[in-house]
Length: 251
Image (cartoon, rainbow, N blue to C red; front, side, top):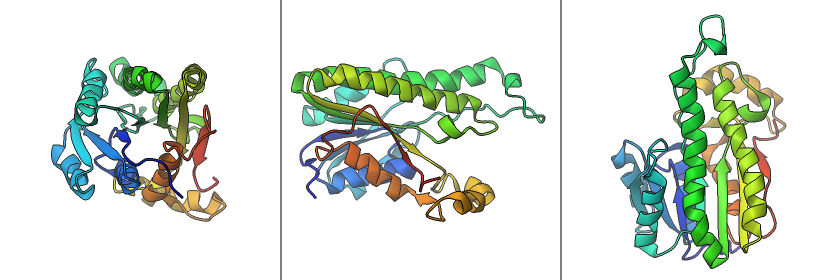
């Protein structure tokens, strides 16, 4: 299937590892030019860019920096003159571990507020920065990465889940606004626990239990989640918008 991505420019935040790396590789394989963002480890992002065989650009991006979104869109536009697809994949985990009794209300204000503000404002800010160009061209795709914690819950995930749930509400309303100005679609991809290098310790603890309740009997890996993101961010997707797509293996 031709996904209609040849020559399009895609921003993948947090594209230097995990699911983001596979998303970047997936778009590049379809002929897109991919901007891979990183916060600290430039070498990791440059490593992914090398894998893209000249179709990539590494750009720093800090979700918490007020001017980061504008600078990112400017860098992408200077490179290819356009931004067609934005994948909000970067995440700020923060330090929101409850106390030994599991009370989320004991998390210091600075910690839980940072998780909410950084994740929500970072994704929304980048979307705001990219939207005017999409409206002018009458074409665009937005894919926001959420988490099954937003709907299933998890002890210790109160603030992270709240931040991700906010993306669901924003994307739904943005789909109506953007859709009036052309073929501009906004969706959320909601993975469950996914096999990545970073998630290794969590998979060791909870992977077997979650695999048992999944219809397919296993956890998904990062490449499988990435395939859904690439499709939703492509021209082949002509009618899915304002949706939250669970990519969890059915659990």
